Length: 329
Image (cartoon, rainbow, N blue to C red):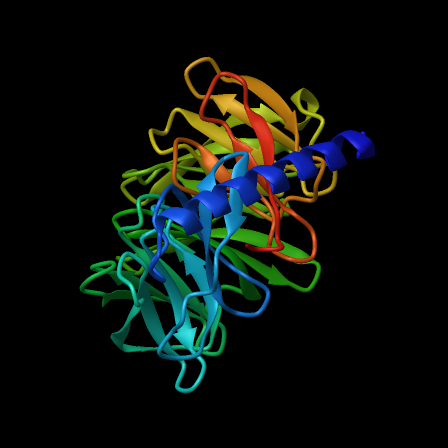
């Protein structure tokens, strides 16, 4: 298996080199054109473009930014990012659709950000402030960012570690850890909040343009249906039906698929929401999450580091794992 993976990585490197040569020949200026999968933060705090297509992609040169930004999270549509200014702790929105990248501050939004989440369609973002125990919700993204809500989480014990926000920005699901105790809370813009589960929740993700979500815990994955300040849980995949304990979750752009990952085994479970039939793919990696890229159901699974970046391409009936070399051009 290791030999096969090395062969796949070598093929990806060769394809990326060929694509890079074509880009350099056809682009005589510093502006790189051609197919792109979007962007990724790297381990130096920079944002790098992912140039090419699934199976033949490489990391481009880092974007130059006007300020030092940390905690960067890329929008699912790959057109902007949200982070925090290192100098004054102000929330910043980075417009990645423009070169050079335009950085816009969010007026009145200063925070010691511990967790940042962006909604499935990129219309809202949520930032957890650990010092004030509040969740700030940002709208008007990316061109006119503004603070929409400030949700009070002071009555919730523990610190926020994982969040998901609905496209309307009116609902946030947040996991809190208090010593050996974990809980998942639903927070509403009305000021209401209530626990969803205390059974060691792992991850949560909203469906696009919906208040409904998927949450995971040791029992498996469940649908959470939100209606008028209440939430009902419906089992989706039981732990007995899957070889995995789900550590990450996401949904497809059309809401027809749910993606679940096990960080320990590397198994990706893809659930068809119409038939509730699971498909299993081994990424041969330790996935850190689902980071949506351009294309239909294409996700980065790992962080850029010394190892190649692993990508799930579920755009066809035969899902596959492809690699992005980290050596650049």
